[in-house]
Every structure is written in structure tokens, then in C-alpha cells.
Length: 116
Image (cartoon, rainbow, N blue to C red):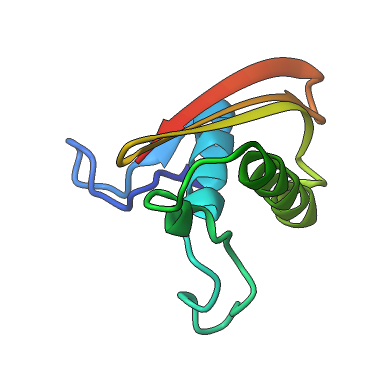
């Protein structure tokens, strides 16, 4: 059983569960929007993606950010998914992340879209 994120109790009064695909999307979201140092037992878990919301836009920053995020995803979720494409856009105070990936266990191609 995969526990749903965010943690909650379902209508039966039990811990809410997630399907495998939902769980993978939730793990990606946690990794993208957790800042390194936020988790006491895993200080290097996460990415610095949220710091970019108010950063000035430039092509160089976008390329460096995509490289950093792809490396972070491969480090923490590389045994579960394979990243095929990654696009990060920063518009005013909104950050949009689109990831195309393959679930290694099932070889299913998925697309996840995340925003903050």
C-alpha cells in the first residue's frame, strides 16, 4: 500500500492510499518542492526549485535549472522512473514544471504537471 500525499484520513477512517501512478506523481512533487535542509534525516533531499519563483528569467538560468532538477530526480527516483523530457517555465510569481517520464516497472509513459 502506498500512502497518499499529503497525509490524510479517508472516508472510511483509515489512512488514505494512492495508486502506483498517483504515488509516483506525489513523490515527484515532494522532491521538486522540498528545499534541501527541510528534512532533518535527509538534509540533501529536495531541490532549490522554489527559490526560482522570484529569480530573474534568462535562458541560462532555465537551462541550469532543468539540468539541476533532472539530476535531482535521477538521484532520488532513478530506480523508479526514467526522465525523457523536462520543461520548467517561470512566469511572474508562478512556476510550472512539466515532466515526461517512463515508469520502469511497467514501461508506461507518463506526463506530470506541477505548479506553485
